[in-house]
Length: 172
Image (cartoon, rainbow, N blue to C red; front, top):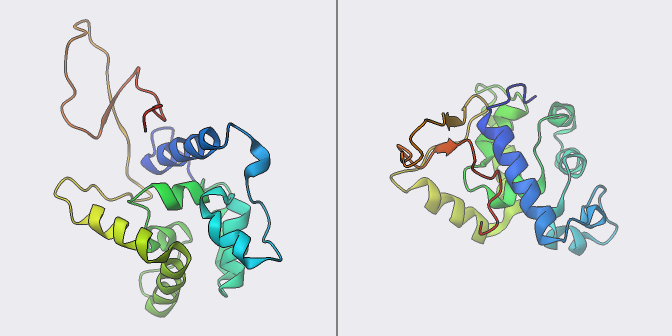
C-alpha cells in the first residue's frame, strides 16, 4: 500500500490518473472496472483500466492469490501505460512476490509483456536505457524543492519538484 505522501509511485499514480481523466473529458464512465465479454474491448483500453480491472487480469493469468495485494496500491491502467518506469518487476514488488520465487516472477513478466504489447514494451526498454533513467520502486520518494525567498532559484535536477508545480501538467 502507498502510505507516504511523498511516494514516487503514489505521485505517478495520481499524475497518470489525472492524465487519463483529462484525455476523456473527466468522464468517470470511460473507466473499465470489469472485464468485458468481448476481449477486443479490453485490448484497446488498457489505459482506462481501474485497479479492480487490473486485479481481475491478475486472476485471469493465474495470480489470484496475489491480486488482493493491489488494493489501495494506486496501480491502474494509466500508470501501466503512461509511466515508462512501471515494469513487471515493480508490479511483482507491489504484489509482494518474493525475489526467490523466480518462476512466478517470470510468469508475471511474460503475462505483463503480452498485456502491454511489443510497442509499449520497447518504449519502456528505450526509457530504461537512457542515462538519466531513475527507476520507479515501491520505496522511492519524490524530492520536493522548498520555496526560497529568491524566486529565480533553479531546480537542481529534473527529478525535483517545486512547490508550485502541477501534478499533471497540461502540456504533458
